[in-house]
Image 1: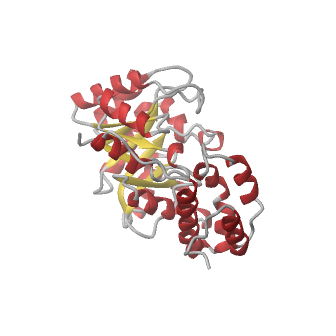
Image 2: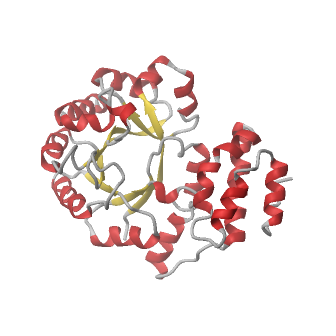
Length: 312
C-alpha cells in the first residue's frame, strides 16, 4: 500500500515544531498553518509569524483571484506546494468570501487554481467540503476538475456541519473516483482520530491518502502507529511516562523558538491530546494549567513520576 498519511493544516497548531515532530513520527507530508493572502501581501506582523522560514507545503486563503496569485508568488521561495483553502467554515474567514464561502462559486475556485498554476512552479491543490448547507459534490468538483489541480483534499462534511456528526467517507470515495478519472490525486479528511480509522480509510476507499487534523494534536505518534498497523498488524501505545516524555520534548523544542513561558502557555491546548485516555488525565490537565515556568513543569513531571532529561 503506497498511500500517504499527511498532517492537515490547522490554524494555531501546525507550527514548525508540530510539523517537525509529525515528520519525525512518520508523516509523509505536512502543511503550514493557513496563511492569509492579504496578510502575506501586506507583510502584516501576525501573518509573517506564520510564514515558514524553511521550505514546506503552504495553505493559502483569500477571496480575490489575482491577490491569491500574487501572494503565491511572494511565498514561492519557501512553498514546496500550495493548497487553496476552500473548506474552512470559521465565520471570520467565510464572511470575507474566503475559505468555504468559495464553495458557493466553484468556478472562482477553478480560476484560482489556474491563476496559481500559471504563477508558481510547485504543485497546486485545493481543500474542499462536500457542500455548504447540503451535499453538492458534483456542482463543486466538476469546475475544479477542469482546472486540473495536482490534488483535491476533501473533508467529508458540509460547511453547515462544521465538525459535528460523522464524516461521509462514501461521498469522499465518490469524489475520488471522479478525480481519478481525470488523473487528479485525492486525499480524504475527517474523523482520523485513531490508527484503526486511518487504516480503514486507506483500505476501504479509493483515496490516494488521508490527512490527519485534530487526531494529531498531542498525538504525533499516530502516523507511526498507523504505518505499523499496516505493516505489522499491531502498534505500540505509549504509556503515561512516555507520553509526558514526548510532551516535554515538544515543550523544549517550542521553548527554543518562542521562549519558555510562551511555550508553556501555547502547549496548554495540546496537553489534552498528550493525556487523552490515560488514568487521571483530567487531574493531569488541571495541574499542568497551573504551570507558568520550567521549574513548575519540572516539579509537575517529578510529581507524576517523569523527570525529563531535557528540562533542567
